[in-house]
Image (cartoon, rainbow, N blue to C red; front, top):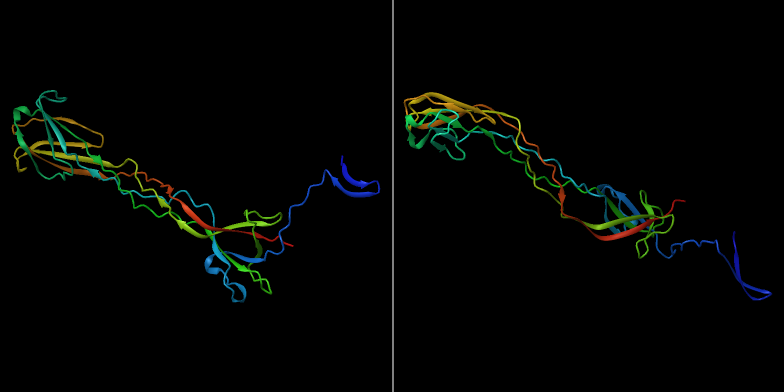
Length: 288
């Protein structure tokens, strides 16, 4: 139910009435604000301002940039020769006195002499380490994806005709808001891209087939070959009995099967900020 509240100076004079259900309209934009012309689109397609006038403002209207970089890649997980074996004075599974022989990291399997030969009466079995897959090498860190942004050119409105492709607008109020019916557009004169991609990484290697064969020699120059030849695949650590009258003086190794494995690459996140500077807000005029 509507009520009117009136103020009277006298019985014959009515000063004002107030309608309690009345909602005042928002203050319209001041018409003293000059009309501007705004163009939005690809920068290389932006038309010049009319009548040869310089732009009032130029800038960028960015969208939210992606938070993930392009995918990384991983090189193959190569087969790596084992470099260690253990001799034992007892037959498999061993348990007697033992001697460990280590060819060192990066051993390529060429003839490796033992520091001291293992006498035949102390050589009853050998435990041979299995081959392994090397870690995968990640690709170089990619660049972050480009920021999706549209170019903005704002021209003065004192023209005698409407420039093709431009829309009429007005500068927003001091608080950056627009009036009812007006469409708000915010853009920035400068975008400073301090983003980067996190380094590429590779998961653990998997798959592949690697079989290594170890050959034993009774001398340090790998001339007197023993009858025993040991082989081991991925995850295997075989123990082999040795029957020889020769001491163990040197070893050789080779990969008789080498199908590389693979690793799962990471999808790096975008790190670092996109700085937006020198903001401007304009309000597009309502269509009539």
